Each structure stands twice: as structure tokens, then as C-alpha cells.
Image 1 (cartoon, rainbow, N blue to C red):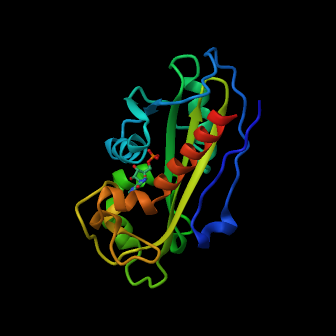
Image 2: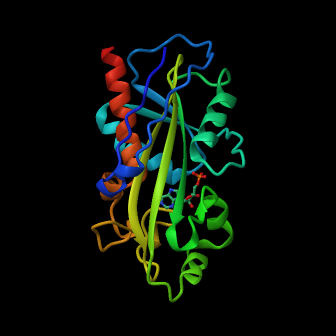
Length: 221
Ligand code: IMP
């Protein structure tokens, strides 16, 4: 069975919208038409909390699993997710999901991009701000790709939020680069927003919305 995921992106990013063709994986689990419980494979408590906030009011239960998976060296989030899902296949009861995200700063030719986790651990927010000292053009975007395995199919859903890098860190909420990222049309950084506010704007919130649309559409199929 083949499916195409819906991809929701904000207006300025429409031209970049990517539709990922799903791949049928050989998963020895009975196909579930109605998904209510999803295992999120992540060790990132921020991502987990955001997924719960977004999905649980819609009737999903989000169970966490921190077993980890190989994050291959790739300059593309989709490849990382695809490899991770395949690796987990057979060792984890479906439905399950994982998510890979990155921050792409235009003035740095897209750095840190898919290496955001490494860059955060080494440079941190202060390091990114230093790289952008005296730089006026500060546009950037977060991208998120969710890989979801329902037991018979894998689908990949993307969310993008355009924005800019602030001139200084602001706010205590969230995680990672939240204190330096200001989404388009806003003055506050993600770290100055509640988790619900961030979720309505963020790359992850949009990818999660696309996941819900996919699951609901599939349940009617
Ligand atoms: P990965 O998806 O686990 O590879 O991690 C990507 C890295 O990007 C995270 O460790 C964070 O540093 C950063 N990141 C991803 N999403 C967000 C977000 O929503 N807010 C702030 N930083 C993020």
C-alpha cells in the first residue's frame, strides 16, 4: 500500500513544501486502522512534552521510549528518519514515531542544519549569536520531519517554520535554540512563549498536525 503524506508549511515556505512518498516496510505487525496510542522514540524531553501537548487533547496517548536509534550522517532529515524507522522495525510494537529536526541559518549557508544537536552541544546559543555578530540578515528556519510506522506503512511528515535569529537570548521556556529563534510575524522568541503558543507556530507542531491528518484520513480509509 502506498500513501503520500500531507505536509503543512507556513505561507513563505510553501515553495519549499516537500511531499514525501511513503515506503512500505516489511513490519510483522497487524495493520492498525485506528491509532490511539503512539510510541515516540526520543530521549528529548522537550520534544516529548510538545508531542503530548499537541496530540493528547485529540485523544492520542503518547508513550515515550528512549531506546534510541542510529542517527546516520546525512545532510537530509528524511534520510535520518527513514534509516531510524527501518532500524526500529521489528523491535518495537507499532504504531511508533520518531522525529528529526534542524535549524537552518541563511547567513551561515544553512548551518547548523541537520547538525543542530551537535552544534547546540558544542557552540550553544552563545556560539550561534557570536557567529552572527554584526550580521543584519538573520533569517532562519526550523524544519522537522516525523517518521511514523503504523504497522504496515511508513509515512514521513514535514513541518517548517520561518523566522530569524534574535540578537540576544530571551526567555526560559522550551529547549535548544528556543531562546534565539523568533518565528515570522512575532517579536517573542519561542522561549518567551508557552508551549501551546510555540506548538501553534512551530515546525514540530505543523509536522504533528500533518500526522494527525494522516492518521485520521487513514482511519476513514
Ligand atoms: P535532533 O532532532 O535530535 O537531531 O536535534 C536537533 C537539535 O535541534 C536539538 O537538539 C535542538 O538543539 C535543536 N532543536 C530542534 N527542535 C528545536 C526546537 O523546537 N526548539 C529549539 N531547538 C530545537
